[in-house]
Length: 187
Ligand SMILES: CC(C)(COP(=O)(O)OP(=O)(O)OC[C@H]1O[C@@H](n2cnc3c(N)ncnc32)[C@H](O)[C@@H]1OP(=O)(O)O)[C@@H](O)C(=O)NCCC(=O)NCCS
Image 1 (cartoon, rainbow, N blue to C red):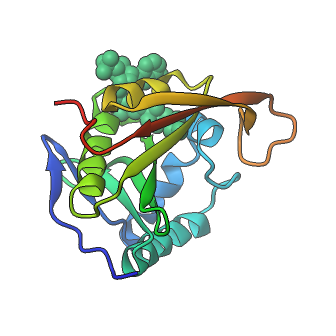
Image 2 (image 1 turned 60 degrees about the vertical axis):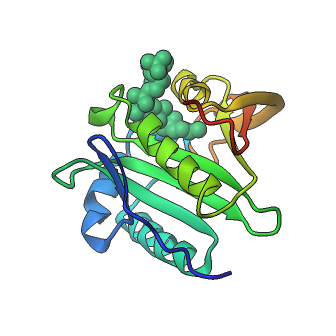
């Protein structure tokens, strides 16, 4: 696939940009957060090597056209979170994911960042569908999905671990499947 060329992506105080080596410490810190560990599928335990792998993954995904995995930063370039879009190049669809730094939550960062990536997905990338999977127990992520205009399309029974990646003792929980098509972004 051709490389993805990123336009300037910003909305109010939130800008999206690729992660770099200088972000490794803050990414590694954020991914220790109990809710990031519980609700995302980042490695557990999460090390600086995992953060460096994320920086490479972001760069490679842009280069091979298979994803847009960015950091949300504020006006002073402080990291607020990560917002990513994995791309299925066969079906021309995407899958949205995000985590927000604990100190930056409940300020609309996930909604602003998610909206920027959805506009990019349905605009320049010309995708025809974007999905999102959230644990039924993840009130915040389900609220973000609804606010972004996603439609609840179904439930995957017991499809997720409600806990860190690979934790066999964690309870299983239903996964909510959310989806959005071009033209369904709220005004
Ligand atoms: C879920 C998460 C991404 C939300 O990020 P955020 O930047 O705080 O979300 P926003 O400020 O954009 O909030 C959007 C909406 O969700 C609601 N919301 C956010 N967190 C919530 C929570 N914990 N419980 C209930 N509602 C919540 C907000 O009130 C807001 O609703 P409104 O538009 O009706 O006012 C963040 O809490 C997080 O990183 N959690 C851990 C990682 C995670 O769960 N990632 C998603 C995996 S699917």
